Image (cartoon, rainbow, N blue to C red; front, side, top):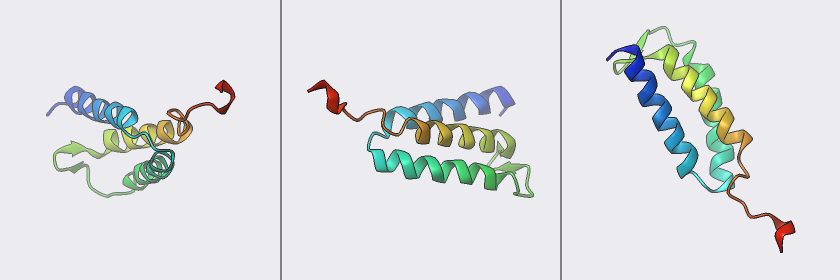
Length: 82
């Protein structure tokens, strides 16, 4: 699989996770887990994992984790709208 296809696949999976995970707790802890897992994959001595490039995988994990954590209250209703 070439780099463009790998990156497109991983980004589309990251976007799907961003829109499908709605509860605050899952977005918070899932985001933290993905963020630190992304930093952890940088130190793996292999170049590929199941045919996917580790560099792209760690980059997408870090960005998706930051997005989930920073927008963890995205689907909560505002209390001021009552």
